[in-house]
Image (tube, rainbow, N blue to C red):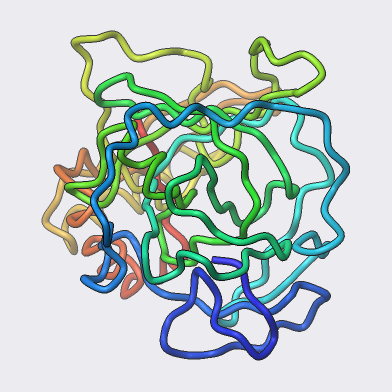
Length: 284
C-alpha cells in the first residue's frame, strides 16, 4: 500500500491521488475482497515463515506525516504506539503489489511478515490475532492503508495465510502493538475503535460477532429514538448498550449482530442513507 506522488499505492485503486502532506503519495484500492490479479500468484508454503522480530528502530523518514488525505478523508498519524489495541476487520494484499515500494520506501514482500495501518507510526511491531480461531502472528507495519471502509489493517499474504484468512479475504482480528524494548505484552491502557476493554479475550467457544455502532449518547431517550429509527428503516436488530464512563453512563446504539463482513459492508452503505456517515465496527 505504499505510494509515491506519481506512483500507484500498494493500497491503490485505479485512481491516483495526490496527498496534501509529506507522505510519499497515496492511491487507494478497495481491498478486503482480493482482486484476481491481487491474489497469491505463486502458491508457497508460508507456514514456516517466522514472525517479525521486534527491535528498536527510529521512525521512518517516509510514511509518517502528521496528517494526510485519501479519497477526501483526513487521517492522523499517532505520535507513539504504546499500549495500542484495536479490534476490527483485517484484509490482505498480494502479488499485484509485490515488489513495489511501501509508504516508507521499503519494498513490499508478500511472503514476509508485514502489514499496513492508517495511523500507527512506521515502523510498528504488532501481534495480530484472528478472533475466530485464535491464530496469531507478529508483523512489522511499514505501509499505509487499507483505505476500504470498515477495515483496520492490511496484512501481507504470508501473515494472512498464517492466521487462516486467505480464503475469505477478511477476518475479525485484534491488533496489539509490541514495545520492542519490552516485547512481552503488557496490559492494554489504550483501546482504539472498540469500546469494550480489548484485553478481555474471547473464550474458545465464544464466536466474535460484528456490530455497527451508529452513535453514543449520554441521554438514553436520544439513544432509544435512534434505535427505533434504524430498526424500522434497516429492518435489522438494533440494540442500546450502556457503558459506564468517568463522565457518566453512555448509551451506544449498535446494529447487529451481523453474520459476515460482507453484510456489514452492505449495512454500512444503508446507514449512510440515514445520515450515519461513519459507523464504527465493533467486535463483541
